Length: 169
Length: 275
Image 1: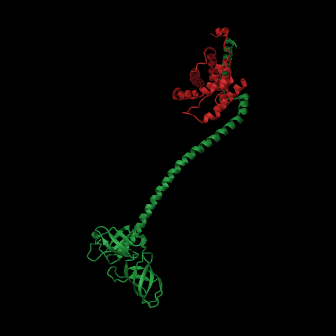
Image 2: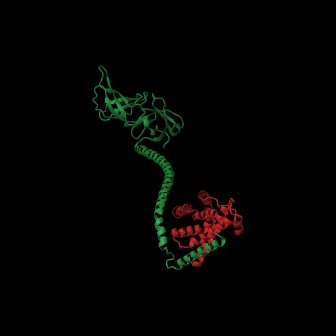
Image 3: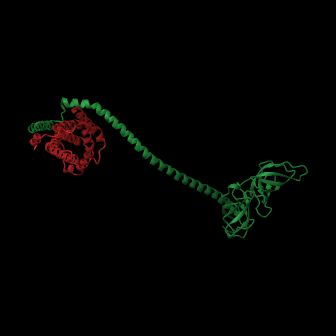
């Protein structure tokens, strides 16, 4: 099953890097990997950081930036989603949308901080205005297909036993 | 995996990414793929190529589709423009033809020693067996009954009734019309009458006359309507005299196309208003 998920992630990134980049909306390109990482992390919390790191590295390879830039942000997103998947009732209907929006903002913050610290690109706070809102909106469009695909591929995790639940808390 | 191990695992990965990122940033070109990255990109390149071709194909199809829509709109606009311009050309052509006709009439008017008034044909006799037209000049303009009506090409007919602002003209082709004529070269005298059809009839030519077809027929000035010398037409045929007949007859092709009159000149009687 892990290979199928890896294939889905690979296909998603190819679609992202070849097709979606051709049709920017409001100057932004949707990043379907964010809701997909979150969906996988909700179902398999332990996979979150690995999936995030792998997808981030793939994006770094495909998008021509410095290696590690997207890997860092996606790793943190995957880890955070995994933590949520273990501690929060992930079947709440609005949670995927809220987490995707927050993850998009978090990724932007991380990217801006890294770019500012490393002086890779000039950074302006305009990146947090309308572009970020557009990016959030576009990523939210990918929530439903990402979670639907994940539901098809991955069974729901076993209910946590009392001991494990106690341990997490 | 326990919580502590998970945390350690995450931190290790985080550290690795930070090291990778730091190494990249410090590098000269700020991007060094290494053999692994190069291998991944090499492996993905065929997939990217295929997907790019699909995207290109779809993009071209979409452009073609939208181009067809634009072309349809453009085509409709151009058709409308062509129709408008065709109407405009027709109107201008009509105006040019009218100008040429009026110019010819004006030249004739300047040459003729008679006082004339130009008139526009505003009505025709709907009955096929009579040949009359109505013009937009009447007694208020000096037009009187039996005023001769001509064009630059030749005789048209005579006025048979007037109102203050219109006049009815009896054309040469009307069966009721008769005009005294002379054949220009042979000097034979005759009378041209209408027969309600295309050509006119010439009557009362002497039996001994030997007139070649094509001789020009002009008004003789007798009868008091047409002045002498206005072209009526050209002799078309001359019938052989019947046994015992005193005169010969023939057909004359009218100089004026009486079915397509649009503007005419009316020769005013002496003493009428000047135009």
